[in-house]
Amino acid sequence: MCIDCGCAPTDHHHHHDAPHSHEEHTVQRRKTISIEEDILAKNNRLAAANRTLFADKGIFTLNLVSSPGSGKTSLLEMTLSALKNEISFAVLEGDQQTANDADRIAATGVPVHQINTGAGCHLDAHMVGHGLEHFNLDAVQMLMIENVGNLVCPAAFDLGEDFKVSLLSVTEGEDKPLKYPQMFRASEIMLINKIDLLPYVRFDIARCREYAERVHPGIKIFEVSCYSGEGLDEWYAWLGEQVSAKGLMVRSKG
Image (cartoon, rainbow, N blue to C red; front, side, top):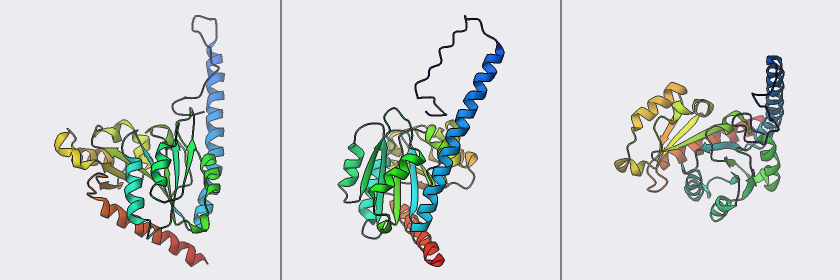
């Protein structure tokens, strides 16, 4: 069940022409809030366990979120191909159906595991915890999680990651940060992708950056193209710094 979009089936068959009292509404609302709290509390406990595991193993973990078609899989393909000889990666692929994206990642030679959510609109910490069983975590320095394409529901679910990374492409509206503030508020990083298309689309990149800053002051922004490669060197350098920092933390504890 999703607490944001309510995509799970419901057995609610309330008809407003049927006799009822407002007390019934209050009781129902209390039940709904209680279920939401239970779902998030359970998820947060499992996310904390994931985070502890990542910390113990020194694995830097990113949770990639975006609308469908913003370029998460393309970003992964470019990043893995460029850095796989320097960083040991693993990838969890989230999607409702098919293993199409996992097949693309597997072609780079990086270990990948597909998680199909069926009717679900996001990954949760329980799914990620079981997905980790498919990797030799002692050999992983960086885990990339490609979440289901959706700018609403994944915002509420902590997976134990170090950072959420929002992707926004220039073929979308520059006002996405204002329209979906919960997601951009939850993300420490934002990538503006497909900047090679800027001459052909109406997208005000300065205004997009201003909107993102308005929702999340201090959010780190990269402008990239997964087609031309523009801007990706800065992204790669930042990833390398984060992986080194995570590894140093583990070595200092030892």
